[in-house]
Amino acid sequence: MFGWVEWSLLTLAAAFLVCAAIPKLRAYRPLFLGGFVLLLSTTLFRRRSDLFGKALASGGAGTVELPVELFGIAWWILGAWLVRSLLTLVLSRTLFPDDNQPHARRLFADLGSGLIYVIALAGIMETVIKQPISAVLATSGVLAIVLGFALQSTLGDVLSGLSINIEKSFGAGDWISLKDHVDGQVIEINWRATRIKTYANDLVIVPNSVIAKAVVTNHRSLYDPFLCALRVTVDNTVPPAAVIELLRAAAAEAPGIAPTYAPVALAHEFVGSLIAYDVFFGVVEFARADAVKSDVILRIVEACTQRRIRIGAETMDVRMVPEAAREAH
Image (cartoon, rainbow, N blue to C red):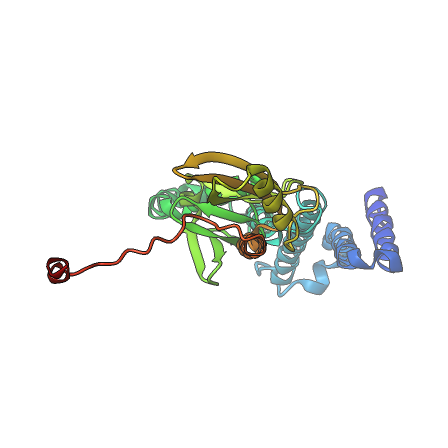
């Protein structure tokens, strides 16, 4: 007869089976079914001496009950799979609730999965195969040291990748700039490297240990537009107030300008007979900054042409007269 432990496990298994049949919990059905199978097998495994001893024994006295050992191995593997699935679910609901960084979530999930399956392997050796795990660890210690030295660079990249994802200084989808003239969008942060897609659609692969030590400029939108600056020089005979108003109005008409940041034009300095003006405007998306700046330049040139305002110094007409022509005169 079953005891109270077995009946408790069977009741919990039945509850998991009922939850798996509920339509609203369809997304978690594999977890409930896996839990049901694990609890049911645990209940039967506890009674294996009476229930399975005669049916699954492979032979007479002195023989190995191989089916029972396989049953125990399957139990540990199924339990490790359930714990790994729960870990993935917890990561998607806590650290990565918006699911906007699947590569970062996969990095943590893979590390946790490896640790879980290592624990499952130790459990299999201790409880099923009846081999002390301490002896295996002692014999593999030298091999672990050799692999540690051989994979020192790779381990540095892995740890740097974890620190990048924990700190979240930048992630997949962000536009970043490195000091080595690398500008682009982060595509993926995996175990070894960070992949960056440049404006020219080139793929730059930077090791995590290198990018973790580099000076990185993240152009992520922090609820403020990306600011651009443009310098224009105009003859000082044109009233500065009129030039400032013209520059501001021309920049405001360009598409892609952030509506929350009105363009600003300021007189900066004298440059000989010219006055240098700075135009500041916000861009909604960093990726469109160059296109918006080009459109602002076109509109400023068009407005200055209509008002007959010359941008920059006037063209000087210099003629070279040969020396023989000068002597003739």
